[in-house]
Length: 145
View 1 (cartoon, rainbow, N blue to C red):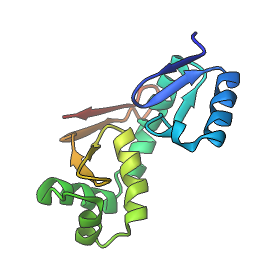
View 2 (view 1 turned 180 degrees about the vertical axis):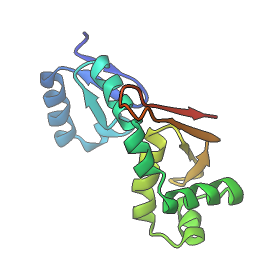
View 3 (view 1 turned 135 degrees about the horizontal axis):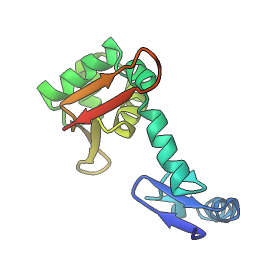
């Protein structure tokens, strides 16, 4: 394992590398710009975290009626900013931001860059399939574009 390996979504490395990076950011906050916010000790741990976030239970909670309504607004109205999505749904931007981060992590939405600091929510999944084995042996979540 390298001391620091970066992908678009996360970074892997030793605890020492994480501590050194944290100290660097404290000295120079600009060093954190564009850097992934998630750190893992290995790619295996990162893969496990992704799998857990896509568990059937997590997906059922994430796809609440309120969140499904947000996804429908994104699909139908195609809002060009978080602010516009907040207006269309009647939810606060901070609340929507947390929800959309979870939906993005699950692979259901994507936050695209707009002009300036504007982030544009876009639906990237068309279907989510939950396969529940009632014996508990095999549950699956499939997200399809």
